[in-house]
Length: 418
Image (tube, rainbow, N blue to C red; front, top):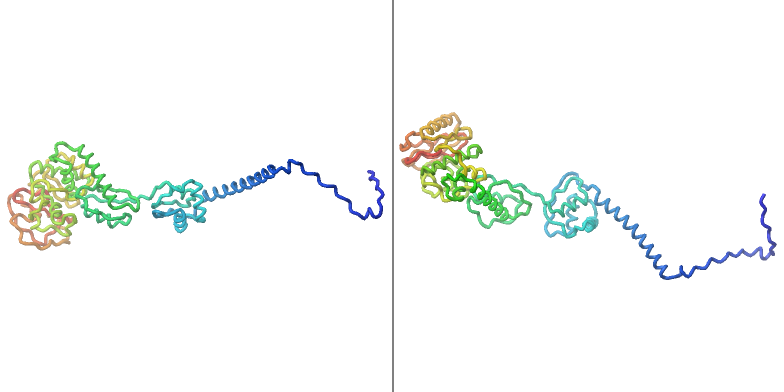
């Protein structure tokens, strides 16, 4: 059993007084140094800042990487001259982001993209994170809209199509020259001016024409790239079938070599309506012999310029036509044509076509016309090319595809009869 320390005797008064606590130790002179005090304060602040920075970094990283609210891919237009706050408002309104605008602005600064945000139309993917959204705008990969310009349209028709397309801005100051635009599928961002579209189509046409002209058959009787475009525009309007272009081109090239009139219906139409491109009715008999710089039933050789904007395939076919001696072609009733070297063979094919036509319900009535000239009526099948034939009835049956008829002239047989 341990021994207790002896109790020292105390007076009653002393026993009533509290015991005195020993004084605290004196601070060292070093602890009282102001530099130490300031250093401790700075160290404490740094610790607090580091903790705050770490928390901020963690929160910011989580915010940047977290999946966004988009439920599906969406295209959003960022207007020109929009500030960072405006962009944040647009993205929030479209449901691309669901964070405070200041958080978006903070993310922009954190990613050092403050001066790299570009206006335009952007496609944001489903659940795109804030980092992905900012990166998309910084990269400037705006949505590209595919615009297809069909082959065989006139420049006026192409300008009309561009004017009706609301992804373009501005107006076309001047209708381009016929044949200077390349029909193709192009991609443009929203907001492209229509003049820029025209310039791009013209540049493409110059480049393609130069390449094709260099690869042309030197035996063709075409003296310049401009003549190539002119004849290619006629080929383009005569057939839309890829397997026929080179044979149609060969017919016209052979006729040029033999100094025969080209006698192509589309040239009549262009001479009548110009850049509007479409007559809207069958050709009248009187219009076949009506003088026009473009009417190849009247003029010799090529017309003064293209009658449309031919595509690459028609330019290629015209520069390198098929090696045939064909001088005639006629619709075969199935959407294609039958090609022949002699007028007698051609006349038989025309008669065959007329027989097919008689079996088709008459759904088109030829417009009334003035008394026809002495030349044969459209679609006449007289095998004597110098003979004249009576005019056909006004209630003439049309071919299955409703193609225009070509007249038989008294000085040379027609190239086509439809």
